[in-house]
Length: 355
Image (cartoon, rainbow, N blue to C red; front, side, top):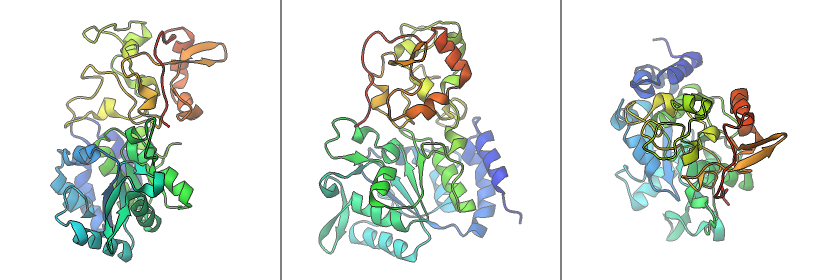
């Protein structure tokens, strides 16, 4: 039976953004192709998190989580849904590690202060195992690591100032420890189920990551700017800004951070293709970005202005953590609107970065 190739896979990922969802279209192809790929095991561990990323995946409707676990991935351990606990759970993880050829999924930020003692995930020979230790020992031997959610990818909410436990994203932890395993950042607070399933499926099928952006996110899911694809974009282009949430208009004045956000929620939508943040009348908080939540607060105040040559404008990349690459990503059209003054100065409030 013919196996799906990389180009066909990416077309399915990018083209399945209607109500059907990526998973519904992709599952039949995966069911045919994954047996030949060997379906390597997956270990899922959690650190400083709210479990929201797991809940998002468990809420996948097309297919349901049963199909994902039985036909897409060979999940050896997950702290919320595995039957094993305690010493048995530790043994399952250790046995999978010893067998090799596994993928590691990390959910939640990694507390690093004081040796990581602020987050422990089990015991070995009567001694507590820190999440920091687990991430490093499992990550060093993994075929690849998925940092699922903005907390695992960039530190997220646990790393927000004052960050008393020294929380960091997986990539930063690996860099400091000299671990060379590739980390793929599936950002979002929480990430869409399709982003997680699609990235894992690509790894399992092709033994390599999809093309990544400068922040380690798969371009197929995070390659577009929310502002450039917003259903309220015509209001922005005509300088019509809502002053209250009950009014029509662009939500920039009410705190929308869409100009700095990158994902495909505007097409893919959530809950089986029913809705997404802007469609529900809420401003985008740029939860997929490296500086979140610092780059988005105050949530309901206008973005902070930045000073470019001959332009005084609101940043598409507020905060140094987002960098020049994100600012370039908004495109010439947005820059033109900035120059025309449609994105003007923010009158009050400051935009903060994570520690």
